[in-house]
Length: 187
Image (cartoon, rainbow, N blue to C red; front, side, top):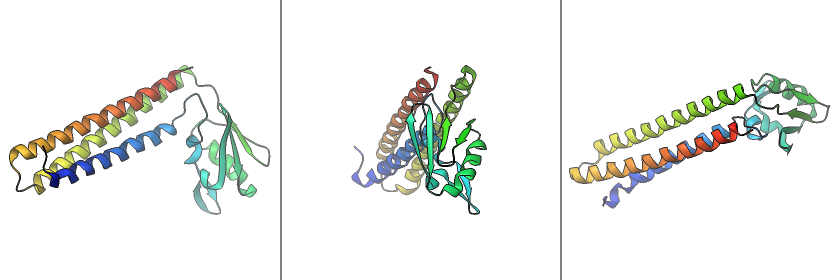
């Protein structure tokens, strides 16, 4: 068993890896699937009185239907800028402005676009797996530098625990990725 003094390394590892999983989930929310999700639009930057501001700070974003966004700006003067930002976002969306709210229909995904999105999901997943492995490497380096009075067996045991935690989080990434891929490919 690992000395209680070394539990800090395990806790730090779990905290950092958990943040990586959370970041991946947030990334995946912004990747389009067949259904409208307000997170897809939240990070769009809108020119608002000379400053780039996140859309979710300028308007409420709702999804009254599975493939429809309704964006209700707090300041009606910003409606044209919001519309322009959505058009220029690279999401392939066409906003309809009625002067009060903006409606955005989510077009049906083509087979080719679904494949591109799955590729993007796999790339983001691989990036996060690399981040998890880097966390493991950094913690192991810290252990080698900082743990002075421990036997080699204790250090090895600690590193083995770190590896088990790493494997667990890599497994979580695979599960989240698989779920998102199914969501994208389901017609």
